[in-house]
Image 1 (cartoon, rainbow, N blue to C red):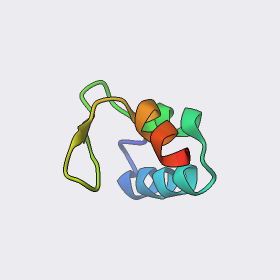
Image 2: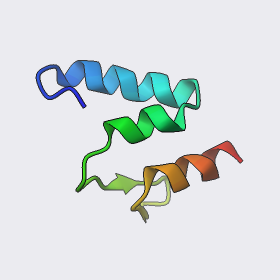
Image 3: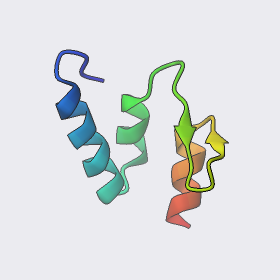
Length: 55
């Protein structure tokens, strides 16, 4: 994650989603990340979430 340029991190996030790059998404997460899904549920693991999205 690029703390100096947060806009770059956001752009990388969207790019990884668009190209379905799970490893890239994992590289952006912090140890204390929290991902909120469409149903307002919490997903503790980005990889599990992305696998669900891709299926």
